[in-house]
Length: 257
Ligand SMILES: [Zn+2]
Image (cartoon, rainbow, N blue to C red; front, top):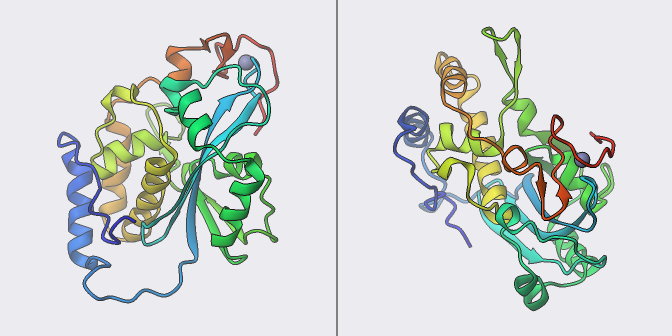
C-alpha cells in the first residue's frame, strides 16, 4: 500500500520547474494524510503491460495489470499468464519475463475477477491512452465503469512553433511535471509505477489547470524539455516483433485507435 500523500514520488532534480509547481501545490492543498478521511474513490487509473503473442504490432496479450485509486493507493498488481504462446516478452519495454509470469501469473479470467471486485460501476478510469488498456481487458463502458479520461487529451498542447498540437508520453509528463528520472526512456515500464504516475498526473492537472499563470508555465515546461526517444523508435522491430512505430512499421498491420 502506498501512503496517500504519494511519498514514493520520484525526484529527478533537473526538472525542477515542474517539481516545484507540484510542491507548491501540495503545500497549498495539503497532503491527504494526517487524519483526513477521504470519501470513496471515484477516479481509478489502470495500466496494462502486454507481451507479444505474434509478430505484428497488434498481437499483444495481457501480462500485468495494476489499479491505483485517486488517493494514489496501489490497489492491485496482478501478473497474468498469457493464454496464447508468447512470441516475445518485450522485456526491456515491459519489465516482464517468462520467469515472472510463470511463477506469479494467473489466468486472465482470475485477474479480471480481482479487478472487477475493486472497480465500482461509477468509476472514472484515468490513463495515458486509457482506451487501449480498456480494450485489452475487454472492460465495458457503462457496465464495468462509467467513463474514461485520457491524459494524452488533458495535456494536449498547442505548439505554435510547429503550428500543430503536441501530445506527450506518460514518461515525458512525469519527468517534466513530477520530477521523475526518466533515464532517457531506457528503463522498462511497470504497470504499477505507470498507473501511479497516471494518477499523480491527473491529480496534478486537477490542481493546476485553473490556477492563474500555472497552466501557462506547465505548457512552456512540457514544450521546452527534450523528448526521450521511445522504445518503438529505438527498436522498430524487437525479437522479430513489429513495435508499431508508424514510420518504421515492418509488419503492415493496420494502426488501430
Ligand atoms: Zn507494424
